[in-house]
Image 1: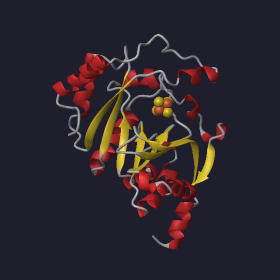
Image 2: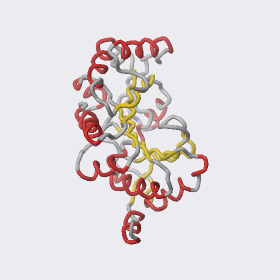
Image 3: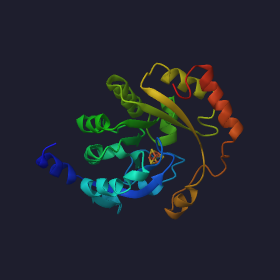
Length: 253
Ligand code: SF4
Protein backbone atom coordinates (compact mmCIF):
# COMPACT_ATOMS: atom_id res chain seq x y z
CA UNK A 1 0.00 0.00 0.00
CA UNK A 2 1.40 3.41 -0.93
CA UNK A 3 1.46 6.28 1.56
CA UNK A 4 -1.22 8.06 -0.50
CA UNK A 5 -3.47 4.99 -0.47
CA UNK A 6 -3.02 4.59 3.27
CA UNK A 7 -3.83 8.25 3.87
CA UNK A 8 -6.97 7.98 1.78
CA UNK A 9 -8.11 4.89 3.73
CA UNK A 10 -7.38 6.54 7.07
CA UNK A 11 -9.59 9.49 6.18
CA UNK A 12 -12.74 7.48 5.41
CA UNK A 13 -15.46 8.46 7.89
CA UNK A 14 -17.91 6.11 9.56
CA UNK A 15 -20.74 6.58 12.05
CA UNK A 16 -20.45 4.39 15.10
CA UNK A 17 -23.30 3.62 17.44
CA UNK A 18 -21.32 1.71 20.03
CA UNK A 19 -18.07 -0.21 20.45
CA UNK A 20 -17.29 -3.29 22.49
CA UNK A 21 -13.68 -4.04 23.39
CA UNK A 22 -13.85 -7.80 23.98
CA UNK A 23 -16.96 -9.21 22.32
CA UNK A 24 -17.31 -12.98 22.58
CA UNK A 25 -20.39 -13.70 20.45
CA UNK A 26 -19.67 -12.03 17.11
CA UNK A 27 -17.31 -14.35 15.29
CA UNK A 28 -14.28 -16.45 16.22
CA UNK A 29 -12.70 -15.77 19.63
CA UNK A 30 -12.56 -12.44 21.41
CA UNK A 31 -13.18 -9.51 19.10
CA UNK A 32 -13.27 -5.73 19.03
CA UNK A 33 -16.78 -4.93 17.77
CA UNK A 34 -17.85 -1.77 15.98
CA UNK A 35 -21.62 -1.33 15.94
CA UNK A 36 -22.39 0.98 13.04
CA UNK A 37 -25.29 3.40 12.97
CA UNK A 38 -28.12 2.89 10.50
CA UNK A 39 -30.11 -0.08 9.23
CA UNK A 40 -32.77 -0.34 6.50
CA UNK A 41 -34.56 -3.23 8.26
CA UNK A 42 -37.08 -2.93 11.09
CA UNK A 43 -36.95 -6.34 12.75
CA UNK A 44 -39.71 -6.83 15.29
CA UNK A 45 -37.18 -8.24 17.76
CA UNK A 46 -34.38 -5.73 17.15
CA UNK A 47 -32.35 -5.31 20.33
CA UNK A 48 -30.67 -2.14 19.04
CA UNK A 49 -33.64 -0.12 17.69
CA UNK A 50 -31.73 3.05 18.52
CA UNK A 51 -29.13 1.97 15.92
CA UNK A 52 -31.68 1.83 13.08
CA UNK A 53 -31.88 5.51 12.14
CA UNK A 54 -29.50 6.66 9.44
CA UNK A 55 -26.55 8.69 10.80
CA UNK A 56 -27.99 11.97 9.50
CA UNK A 57 -31.03 11.51 11.73
CA UNK A 58 -29.07 10.34 14.75
CA UNK A 59 -26.02 11.43 16.68
CA UNK A 60 -24.01 8.25 16.05
CA UNK A 61 -20.41 9.36 16.58
CA UNK A 62 -18.39 10.05 13.45
CA UNK A 63 -14.95 8.48 13.41
CA UNK A 64 -12.20 8.15 10.84
CA UNK A 65 -11.07 4.72 9.70
CA UNK A 66 -7.58 5.54 10.92
CA UNK A 67 -8.83 6.25 14.46
CA UNK A 68 -11.06 3.17 14.46
CA UNK A 69 -8.24 0.88 13.35
CA UNK A 70 -5.93 2.40 15.97
CA UNK A 71 -8.45 1.66 18.74
CA UNK A 72 -8.68 -2.00 17.82
CA UNK A 73 -4.96 -2.45 17.15
CA UNK A 74 -4.23 -1.11 20.66
CA UNK A 75 -5.91 -4.26 22.03
CA UNK A 76 -4.46 -6.60 19.44
CA UNK A 77 -2.76 -8.92 21.94
CA UNK A 78 -6.20 -9.82 23.41
CA UNK A 79 -8.04 -10.21 20.11
CA UNK A 80 -8.63 -12.86 17.47
CA UNK A 81 -10.16 -10.23 15.22
CA UNK A 82 -12.56 -7.36 14.71
CA UNK A 83 -16.25 -7.47 13.79
CA UNK A 84 -18.41 -4.82 12.18
CA UNK A 85 -21.96 -5.12 13.38
CA UNK A 86 -24.84 -2.73 13.78
CA UNK A 87 -27.16 -1.50 12.61
CA UNK A 88 -26.20 -2.70 9.15
CA UNK A 89 -22.46 -2.28 8.52
CA UNK A 90 -22.83 -2.65 4.76
CA UNK A 91 -24.73 0.66 4.76
CA UNK A 92 -21.24 2.14 5.24
CA UNK A 93 -19.15 -0.11 2.97
CA UNK A 94 -16.32 2.32 2.26
CA UNK A 95 -15.62 2.82 5.96
CA UNK A 96 -15.80 -0.92 6.64
CA UNK A 97 -13.43 -1.64 3.76
CA UNK A 98 -10.99 1.08 4.83
CA UNK A 99 -10.79 -0.09 8.45
CA UNK A 100 -10.55 -3.70 7.31
CA UNK A 101 -7.58 -2.99 5.04
CA UNK A 102 -5.81 -1.01 7.78
CA UNK A 103 -6.40 -3.86 10.25
CA UNK A 104 -5.09 -6.40 7.74
CA UNK A 105 -1.75 -4.59 7.79
CA UNK A 106 -1.65 -5.31 11.53
CA UNK A 107 -2.68 -8.96 10.90
CA UNK A 108 -6.08 -8.47 12.53
CA UNK A 109 -8.78 -10.20 10.46
CA UNK A 110 -12.20 -8.58 10.18
CA UNK A 111 -15.68 -10.08 10.00
CA UNK A 112 -18.85 -8.35 8.82
CA UNK A 113 -22.06 -9.14 10.70
CA UNK A 114 -24.74 -8.34 8.13
CA UNK A 115 -28.31 -9.06 7.14
CA UNK A 116 -27.23 -8.66 3.52
CA UNK A 117 -25.86 -5.69 1.63
CA UNK A 118 -28.75 -3.23 1.08
CA UNK A 119 -27.15 -2.45 -2.28
CA UNK A 120 -24.74 -5.07 -3.57
CA UNK A 121 -22.77 -2.61 -5.67
CA UNK A 122 -19.02 -2.29 -6.14
CA UNK A 123 -18.52 -0.64 -2.73
CA UNK A 124 -20.27 -3.40 -0.79
CA UNK A 125 -18.50 -6.08 -2.84
CA UNK A 126 -15.13 -4.47 -2.10
CA UNK A 127 -15.92 -4.43 1.63
CA UNK A 128 -16.90 -8.11 1.52
CA UNK A 129 -13.79 -8.95 -0.53
CA UNK A 130 -11.59 -7.31 2.12
CA UNK A 131 -13.17 -9.17 5.06
CA UNK A 132 -12.05 -12.59 6.25
CA UNK A 133 -15.55 -13.76 7.17
CA UNK A 134 -19.21 -12.82 6.86
CA UNK A 135 -21.69 -13.46 9.65
CA UNK A 136 -24.78 -13.45 7.46
CA UNK A 137 -28.24 -13.30 9.01
CA UNK A 138 -31.05 -14.84 6.97
CA UNK A 139 -34.17 -13.61 8.74
CA UNK A 140 -36.55 -16.12 7.15
CA UNK A 141 -36.38 -18.67 4.35
CA UNK A 142 -39.76 -17.45 3.12
CA UNK A 143 -39.38 -13.94 1.73
CA UNK A 144 -42.99 -13.03 2.59
CA UNK A 145 -42.34 -13.91 6.23
CA UNK A 146 -39.06 -11.98 6.14
CA UNK A 147 -40.98 -8.97 4.87
CA UNK A 148 -43.54 -9.11 7.67
CA UNK A 149 -40.81 -9.67 10.22
CA UNK A 150 -38.29 -7.07 9.08
CA UNK A 151 -40.04 -4.78 6.60
CA UNK A 152 -38.11 -6.28 3.67
CA UNK A 153 -37.87 -9.63 1.92
CA UNK A 154 -34.78 -11.84 2.05
CA UNK A 155 -33.48 -10.92 -1.42
CA UNK A 156 -30.53 -8.84 -0.14
CA UNK A 157 -29.40 -11.64 2.15
CA UNK A 158 -29.62 -14.22 -0.63
CA UNK A 159 -27.80 -11.98 -3.13
CA UNK A 160 -25.03 -11.47 -0.57
CA UNK A 161 -24.86 -15.21 0.05
CA UNK A 162 -24.59 -15.86 -3.68
CA UNK A 163 -21.77 -13.33 -3.94
CA UNK A 164 -19.93 -15.09 -1.11
CA UNK A 165 -20.42 -18.42 -2.87
CA UNK A 166 -19.08 -17.01 -6.13
CA UNK A 167 -16.02 -15.53 -4.40
CA UNK A 168 -15.47 -18.39 -1.91
CA UNK A 169 -15.89 -16.01 1.03
CA UNK A 170 -16.39 -17.98 4.26
CA UNK A 171 -19.83 -17.45 5.82
CA UNK A 172 -21.22 -18.21 9.24
CA UNK A 173 -24.92 -18.25 8.64
CA UNK A 174 -27.09 -16.90 11.45
CA UNK A 175 -30.80 -17.32 11.98
CA UNK A 176 -32.94 -16.02 14.84
CA UNK A 177 -35.48 -18.51 16.16
CA UNK A 178 -38.66 -16.60 16.90
CA UNK A 179 -41.64 -18.54 18.28
CA UNK A 180 -44.66 -18.28 15.99
CA UNK A 181 -42.47 -17.05 13.13
CA UNK A 182 -39.28 -18.95 12.37
CA UNK A 183 -39.39 -21.55 15.15
CA UNK A 184 -41.61 -23.73 12.97
CA UNK A 185 -40.83 -27.09 11.38
CA UNK A 186 -41.81 -26.04 7.85
CA UNK A 187 -39.74 -22.85 8.10
CA UNK A 188 -36.68 -24.65 9.41
CA UNK A 189 -36.91 -27.36 6.74
CA UNK A 190 -37.20 -24.66 4.09
CA UNK A 191 -34.16 -22.88 5.54
CA UNK A 192 -32.19 -26.14 5.52
CA UNK A 193 -33.06 -26.83 1.89
CA UNK A 194 -32.26 -23.23 0.95
CA UNK A 195 -28.75 -23.18 2.41
CA UNK A 196 -27.71 -26.76 1.68
CA UNK A 197 -26.10 -26.09 -1.74
CA UNK A 198 -23.84 -23.27 -0.50
CA UNK A 199 -20.28 -24.48 0.01
CA UNK A 200 -19.21 -21.11 1.41
CA UNK A 201 -21.22 -21.71 4.61
CA UNK A 202 -18.81 -22.97 7.24
CA UNK A 203 -21.19 -22.88 10.17
CA UNK A 204 -24.85 -22.38 10.98
CA UNK A 205 -25.69 -20.53 14.19
CA UNK A 206 -29.26 -20.64 15.49
CA UNK A 207 -29.86 -17.69 17.79
CA UNK A 208 -32.70 -17.94 20.31
CA UNK A 209 -35.03 -14.94 20.46
CA UNK A 210 -34.53 -12.83 23.59
CA UNK A 211 -36.02 -9.61 24.90
CA UNK A 212 -32.89 -7.84 26.13
CA UNK A 213 -33.61 -4.78 23.99
CA UNK A 214 -37.29 -4.44 24.91
CA UNK A 215 -36.73 -1.47 27.23
CA UNK A 216 -35.09 0.48 24.38
CA UNK A 217 -38.32 0.36 22.37
CA UNK A 218 -40.17 1.98 25.27
CA UNK A 219 -37.48 4.62 25.65
CA UNK A 220 -37.88 5.48 21.94
CA UNK A 221 -41.67 5.66 22.30
CA UNK A 222 -42.13 2.80 19.84
CA UNK A 223 -44.50 -0.13 20.37
CA UNK A 224 -42.86 -3.48 21.06
CA UNK A 225 -45.12 -6.18 19.61
CA UNK A 226 -43.38 -9.27 21.00
CA UNK A 227 -44.14 -8.72 24.68
CA UNK A 228 -46.12 -11.95 24.90
CA UNK A 229 -43.76 -14.01 22.76
CA UNK A 230 -41.96 -16.51 25.00
CA UNK A 231 -38.19 -16.90 25.10
CA UNK A 232 -36.80 -19.94 23.28
CA UNK A 233 -35.99 -22.90 25.53
CA UNK A 234 -32.92 -25.11 25.32
CA UNK A 235 -35.20 -27.97 24.23
CA UNK A 236 -36.60 -25.89 21.38
CA UNK A 237 -33.10 -24.91 20.29
CA UNK A 238 -32.06 -28.58 20.22
CA UNK A 239 -35.27 -29.45 18.33
CA UNK A 240 -34.57 -26.76 15.72
CA UNK A 241 -31.00 -27.96 15.26
CA UNK A 242 -32.34 -31.47 14.77
CA UNK A 243 -34.59 -30.31 11.95
CA UNK A 244 -31.70 -28.66 10.13
CA UNK A 245 -29.61 -31.79 10.70
CA UNK A 246 -32.40 -33.91 9.23
CA UNK A 247 -31.93 -32.13 5.92
CA UNK A 248 -28.13 -32.15 6.29
CA UNK A 249 -27.70 -28.43 6.87
CA UNK A 250 -26.33 -27.61 10.30
CA UNK A 251 -23.27 -27.25 12.48
CA UNK A 252 -19.65 -27.01 11.38
CA UNK A 253 -19.36 -28.23 7.81
S1 SF4 B 1 -30.98 -6.13 10.95
FE1 SF4 B 1 -30.23 -6.01 13.07
S2 SF4 B 1 -30.01 -3.81 13.50
FE2 SF4 B 1 -31.30 -4.01 11.66
S3 SF4 B 1 -33.39 -3.93 12.45
FE3 SF4 B 1 -32.78 -6.09 12.27
S4 SF4 B 1 -31.97 -6.68 14.29
FE4 SF4 B 1 -32.05 -4.40 14.19
